[in-house]
Amino acid sequence: MKEDEKVLVVPREKIFEKEYWQGLKRDDLGHYINIIKNNYSFMRRGDVEEDPSFQQIIPYILFSFQKKFFLYKYIQGAGEKRLVNNYQLGVGGHINEIDEMGEFIENAVLREWSEEVKFKGNILNKKFVGILNDDSRPVEKVHLGIIYHFEGDSPDIIVREKDKMEGELVDLDKIRGLAQEIQGWPPIVWRDYLAELL
Image 1 (spheres, rainbow, N blue to C red):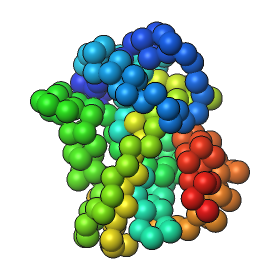
Image 2: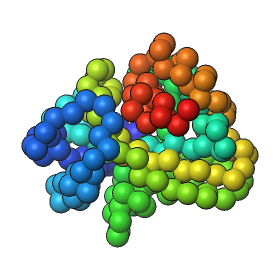
Image 3: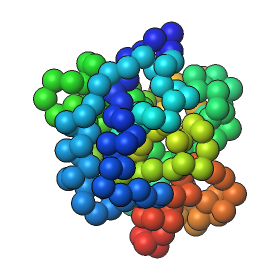
Image 4: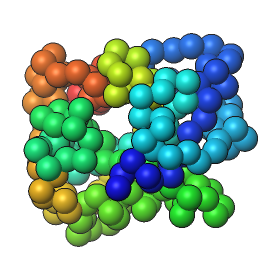
């Protein structure tokens, strides 16, 4: 049961003690990573999914091949029903206790990458882009995105859980169009990062 999964959380007041932001923060990132590393705990997912006093930390990996980015959509089989028919630009998920040894954020990034997609190729570059906060909807308000960008040398990428999501590589023009129509993290990622790549 996903409700019983133990997920890494940080008190919201700790994250925003210094300043509050809405969108993708790209400066002073070391400060916020240290806050996460020094103030985290693991809590039952069902207890925090609607509790905005805690931020669930979500590694969120953008993937690109040349000028195309991986875009996916949750379908009816998705575990998080609030996200059905929503688009995402990042592969990701919660940080679990299994990730805790060593650099747990990086461990979770690599685990989620291997669990969510099958990629036949090599990752040429890994970039830590920023930390995303979005308080516009209840589902995003309880999550904080740790945004990475992986560049690969192959377009051979597919989602593993085809009963929950579908994915494809798309160009930036398509993402720009979608960003005008959808909610959640993809429009913010577009506005605060991808738009500058055009």
